[in-house]
Length: 300
Image 1 (cartoon, rainbow, N blue to C red):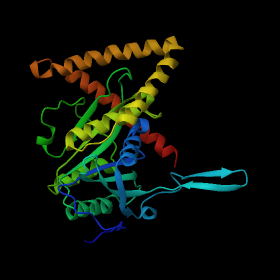
Image 2 (image 1 turned 45 degrees about the vertical axis):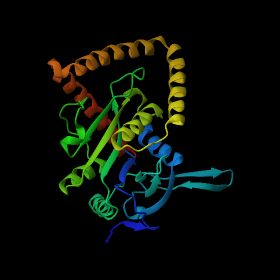
Image 3 (image 1 turned 90 degrees about the vertical axis):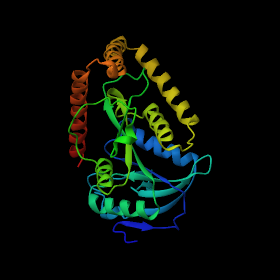
């Protein structure tokens, strides 16, 4: 197989109908949920690196400078970017692959060509992405998740939280689209992170992603430690809010707005029209994403 940016570093295992999970850090990962979810999966399943992308060719080091650790009089560590493919086995021994690392700045089309070549070579049955977007929802409710796919049958029985919208491009979204153009099934899950927590770690959103991936693929992925982290984060946030009545009042107003939307969404098939609400929500999400894109450009 011919690869442009991808280098195989180990023999590719022969899995039966494997799934490819993918999630990139850098843009669509509010609450750092994608990183938390991917790192949790890799920390709790058997895995090995089987391929690495040539990150130097596709990463802008000056726009997103890697972090260095300086200890008194010397540099002691460097957190360098990576984009890797891992061969994994879940708790029942089922084989699957995880593509995880930074979203590249350059070469998206050549990277997608490599991913499609990899998908063909290992006979991936379904590619599944993990995303996280800021959303006007309170942290006191279950994390909403929007599913999307390049085949309608993959979304059977699901109702979207969003209407039509235009968003800044991402490698994840473009990959799903182009996999569809090549008749390769792909779907994804976008966790809706409370917008006021978008810049903080939000393990509850990561937990929602892992659960959705498990349900969609049949993979048995452990969640105990992630659930404990989410509960601890919620307790800490509740304590902080109790100390500030103004913030608590704002959360209560958000709860009322969210509960009204959820009630109309649940009854949508029976007839209620909540398109006005979804259009408003979509507009708010578009605004959040535009702000994220602007902040990213300001860091360059």
